[in-house]
View 1 (spheres, helix red, strand yellow):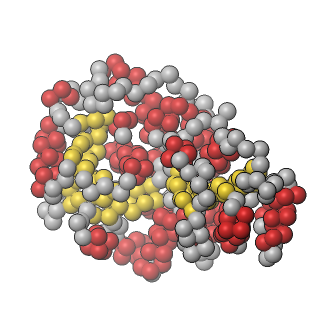
View 2 (cartoon, helix red, strand yellow):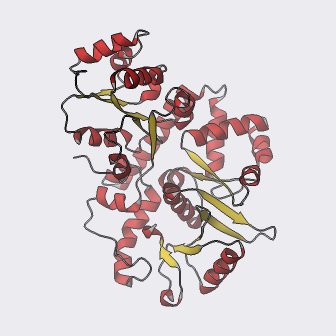
Length: 393
């Protein structure tokens, strides 16, 4: 049975619009399952689902005469006298597909639902071809509520986010630890023992390396980008020193930047830039690095619990808008600023002093709100305002 992802709710509003729906994101986040979930909810029978990892299906769209493609789709059972719903999975595997989709939309009012695993590739491919003819939705690993759904857990998170009893916290915390240490990739969550989860994490990394880096990246030295990934895994939440990385890997600064751009463009990492009211200043300053999933980080690195928890909070915050960090020249900082209005600190064991400090800095830089996400249960929780458990993010 296909389980509903939260992303389906915003997509549902566009099921009958003329624009193509494109779902993109990191490999193995569940794009194919979401596409099939949508397919099952289109009441029409005049629809078709084609997996473009199948070479035969790729061949259907390689014709230079696009009307022949239309004829092929008719042969496969579609009736162009009615509204047609075309579902294509893994569109990055067919290079001329954007032009085909544009033609089908313009000439036959066909409704297209598409998935692609590489943002880096898709943005370059679709920017000009489908201007005004597409909506792009990004799918990320499961958040904690989705994790509970996929675990078939009967636990429901309480309504009151910050003040819950210790026994309720302890019940939720065991599952939350699993979520942090093994992450939110659907196939990992669905595995029933930890050995299988570890094997799935290794398979996800191998799949990404072979199908994104080797197939799409076209790098001269694949072992260098592998070493870059391993290096970055040990620097979660740290500022990127391009000069130091360049020296350690024995490659130019330009090459380091190109590799990092590719890793970010394919959703494997994300750069978080410092907070500024001036967008140009923000882009120029040094970024911090986080990864797509705390399970991958935990499996392939030896970072401490605090950094792992911080990465998990990050991967959930990125679903909710723009993320920055803030740091004074004195070194005082705020871990994350969400949508330029909420200051967020991540603490394993927060103190009242942490709350006062965050409140003070947030007021200084004119943030509307602030909060601390904690992993553990503070002994004086009742005395601390604006402290929430990480699983409520």
